[in-house]
Image (cartoon, rainbow, N blue to C red; front, side, top):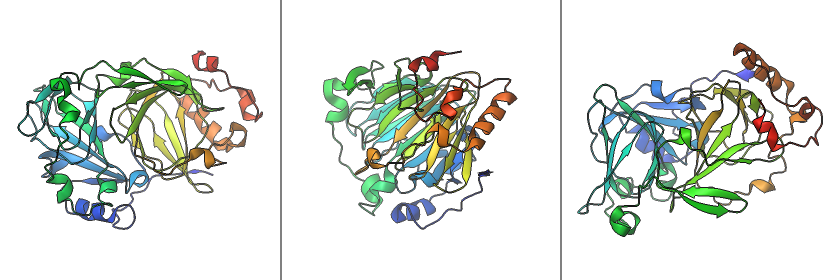
Length: 371
């Protein structure tokens, strides 16, 4: 198979979350569709009355009906109006540095500083105001919430935008002093360690990483979790000149490129055409439900991605007998494409030759360390 070039996918009222589609169609904000976004930093943005600032909404095929993803622009030296939502919201800082104030009505504000690559959680129905500390450049923040999914359970948007209920125990235990602490708490989850916090200052320097993955899917991972969150989040770090074999899973995993690096992702439905998406800083891609996809690092440095997963009620990945494809069964075009992209960067592959022919090839974690 040869890859397809992404063509615009028109905003479609069918599928996904009909109530969310109706609400989104009423908004004065650019909506970007398709399978991926090459760089959220260069997206067309315009004034969004709902949030009181320039913005753009992503409505990609892989998260329709589950997640809302939007990008807010905070003008240089300014603050945007406070906002709140009767759902939690996850925020990743794409560009800039500034201040955040989070509070419940009638209670003290909890303030903290953020910078490029910071990652934090706004609890359900708390006010949040973001301020740009730089006077020479706008800041950009990427936000993820579950509004499309929630509107399938209650079709009235006012329930989520005008609901007064706040769980004060979320933020005001110990006067809120520790909620946005930069110190993460280690928690053992099975055989792996995860790290729990509501604020991670810089995901590009996070070094609590462990090798993980089944045969053909080795990489480094960092389990970063928000306590009390419906989302599960993690980092995947793939060293240079390597790739992982294809796998598939349920919809609703938003993947964000967070490091200046070079790579690509191949996605396809079983028996269908390939979609090739960039894997670079600012890229966002969301594999549609049970589409195969694979991550290929064709650059000279490690490549990091942030993965933000919506709840997967009832999903059982182990029940899928074709969840992943052995290297020996992959289309040879994928290897050729990978080696061509490496050559453009003056590099050669570090993939073990035997993996392409031996379905029982034994992968060793030391392979991740080879130069």
